[in-house]
Length: 431
Image (cartoon, rainbow, N blue to C red; front, side, top):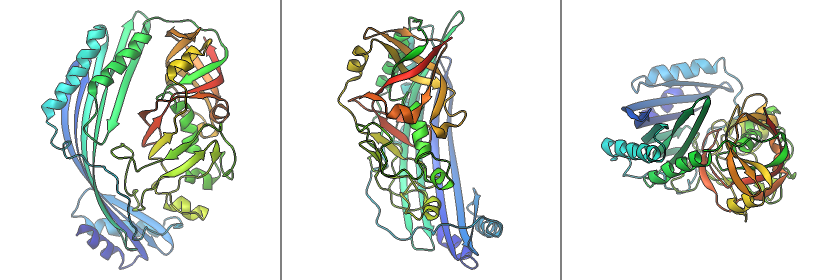
């Protein structure tokens, strides 16, 4: 009812209007330094109105459901000074079916969440009592409605569950930090597996292995793939394309990666944390092939960027963010990649990613958690090592793609289902 009122009020002056209502309730349990730190629950309501007035776009938000007159007035007022509206608001359309809601998540007892966090802490401490452990469990229930003057109407409920565990271990001047995270819309996360994977990262890091500077093969774990994925997701962002800042602008149909690489933006995967049936603008979600066998096929657009480009929205509004980035698995196991490496690195996480001109593909980052590979075996953790290169060059220099993808969180929003990837050669600098 409130959205109809907002549209009716806005259309007394505007040529077009869009109204959205979002409600979210989140319960968060966190542990810090081995102990329960907090159990918090919070609720939030957000209302937004966007209008097109005189060919210009205006918007306003409020957290007060009674502020219907005020939020509409402010949206109309900002439109008088707004930029040109390159978009038309979404109209009526059939939306795909995708599972986004698990009724067991809202009913998850706080004590159960505390018990899960404590068990993850206990499993980590059982491996090494010196680790100062932290953990968290969060459960979110969200409701969102959208209505436009063009006839789009949609309402959806979503749940989200996240678990993480890890910590730091200090021995003299050596500080080791390792974490593992899992996020899903359905209550089927195995928290013991999360803890065991965190333990495995600590186990492989027990010994410090010196390494010399040079060019060498680098294997990126699914989490470590953020080094390459960040530049790519910025490059396929339709907003960057229309502004001319993406190095991929004008390159649809070009070979930009190894022919074995296929990448899809897929929001239609049941219960994946980036999944949705419509985007924030009411555009139906769709699976969008981005790279097919190394060939650039599509960019990701919201309504504004699509209007500027003379294209159609891919359902990635707003800001053309990816949903679930999915890389087609290859035929090589991670174990085989390691066994086939005489001298190289396995990279799980880095520091400094995104600093500088990330969209160009260039990176120069510190390896935060990485392991030296020698004669086909992991021999220990590397310290004070930098990794440098260009993501686009690296994607053309793939030696192998892993056969077992894993879910991880994208640095530019959404989620990613990625296998490990071995790059034939990158620059490694040891201090």
